[in-house]
Length: 183
Image 1 (cartoon, rainbow, N blue to C red):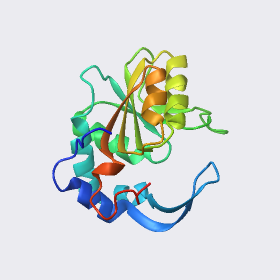
Image 2: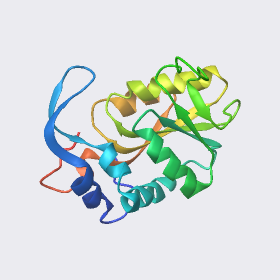
Image 3: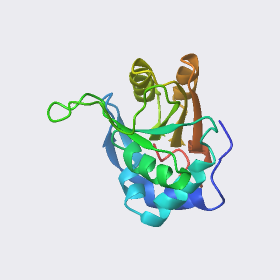
Image 4: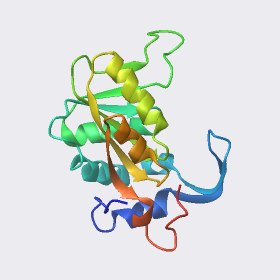
């Protein structure tokens, strides 16, 4: 586990606002008793601003564009873009079926060093898929940011594909008794 990159008190505020004790079903079919609700984070303007400000310190100097992963990463990337002055793009899991038919919306990414942004990283599969999508259009991706990292192998899997994960918090950083409860 990494040491928290969050300023004092931010982990407690995030846990209080976004850690929810209620049944939650993952895409894999697994059932959780509690989870990290990125919508509660995104709907609290002060908390979203403070989280983005803290995450701005994690953005590599080489970053040229920030790429928010649908859906949890979108409000984060907007706030992080405002905090850093870097342009943002928005990544869909699949290309839009109508209208623009794009998978990548927002700023131009061709040839620009992109940093992925998401709320929670578990296995890292979604970030890896998005890194591949950006790489296919010519955007180098070597870094990803998240608010919360769960110890489920995501960091190692991303590293195997040349993507370094920068987490604001890990599960262990959440204040007791909630540590281990927020997934």
